[in-house]
Length: 196
Image 1 (cartoon, rainbow, N blue to C red):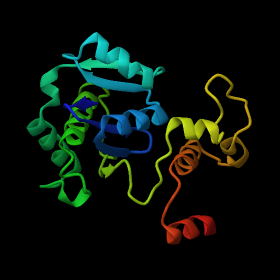
Image 2 (image 1 turned 30 degrees about the vertical axis):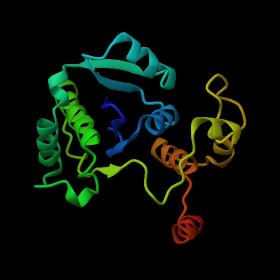
Image 3 (image 1 turned 60 degrees about the vertical axis):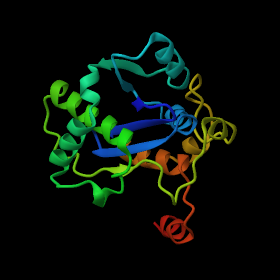
Image 4 (image 1 turned 90 degrees about the vertical axis):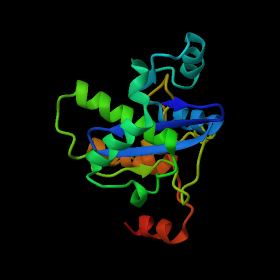
């Protein structure tokens, strides 16, 4: 995660599925998304103050925070890391070329993964924008009020997810959870999903 005066850039990686997403938006929007996503680990520059980290922890209370050297949040390094990882000359084809802060966050994640995981990252071969224009954004309060997922303090509570979840794999469960958290707006795609 990286920020400037008005916006925050984030990048998200799920190593099990190869999902790689980038987002850059106004601080409030990104922090709401962070609260919904509830990532296991958040990478932040080591130059961040304790106050800033405490504020961020309000939106991601169960996340582990890892400090990275500030130079790893450099745009040129990030762009180079991303284009090498995706084996492309430019990021134009991924729709994220104007998301400077998102690209910086994605590059920092790649640097961190190469240093710590010591595994092949070839399955991270595409990147997409987190908030698709054809998906509805639901904030954490809306998700909680609609009882889409079990509450954090009672994982056995009845929710829409617990009723619908007949998936056979963890990956299928994550996909269903993603679909429930981000309902489609495009009628054609909604009908395709219903048919499937």
